[in-house]
Length: 413
Image 1 (tube, rainbow, N blue to C red):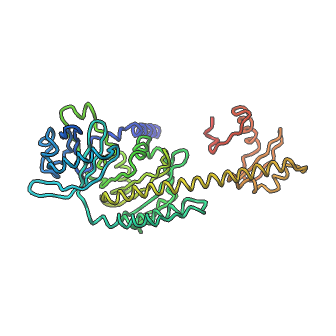
Image 2 (image 1 turned 60 degrees about the horizontal axis):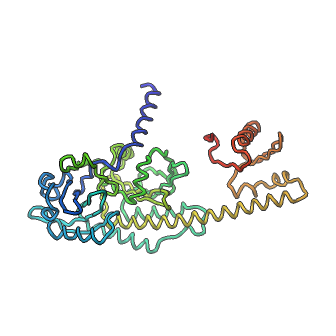
Image 3 (image 1 turned 30 degrees about the vertical axis):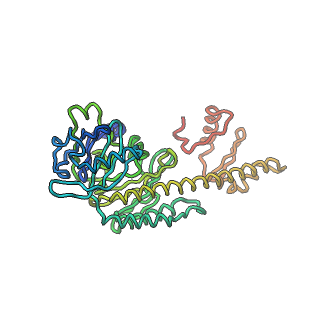
């Protein structure tokens, strides 16, 4: 295959990823069952195809019936009370006992409203996983605020990654930070012995397309229990899902994009838990847990991770504010130093060149150029004089009468 053809296919694949409606997959993961419910009549209008496995009733036997006739009057009454007393714009978790023929099983339930439907998700509860969540919750109370006096967020993030992997049992835990151009970097990692480290690796922005970032902003915790498990389709009343597809943005069981599943499979990942780190309305980064085999964390662990995400976000925001204050103080010192140099009777250019480090450090520069007419004085790591003069001419023409700064001059127009 010609290289240009391969490049074109790659670009087309990226475009397809960017516009894939991942919030409307019409499928769930197989480790639970989903019901769509009319919020007024409690008629079930949607059921996942695996309902027989969990409820001993096929979708055809469920759709059109009341929730009470499927799960019992007590469950319907509880759903009704939750709807009346809680804001269901976010999932509300609770525990119920579900009848399956002549037997019963304990379910971790989640209820939220999306559009004109209530969405009820049921997963088997696992009390054995509560211990890890309790340990994580206890650790959160002793939250290691290690950023107060440091100039780097990395040691704090490293402590988070280490503790979360120990308590959650995943093979790898990473904190992944987004840079200003949206590409990501693994800035902290705790990994099981024998696995290759990812610490310090950078990933292109296209790895997480725009609509995926939007989902991470709306849903802080995303669980993929088994990369290799088949997905389960949803079944609705005639034409119901065709005319109004189910928005699964906040569904715990939402099926993942085939592209994402293949991406993880290529990395040798069997399951994942991803927690968003959000600053205001900005996705700062992700706390990512990977496991080589299937793994389905309990709701209690997910809730603990959600709380941890909020705590990390608060600490990162405080760290960034402290950094901004440091930068403002440094820049003010630099401005004062420059003004003092101008006020001195000595040669101001030579004064600057005599101690360039004092001017480099506040803005983390590695080079300096002073241009006066056609004279160029340089210090540190800088381009050649011809390039410096071309940059001067371009800045003068493109940004006259203003201070211009960029961290990607080659991409400037």
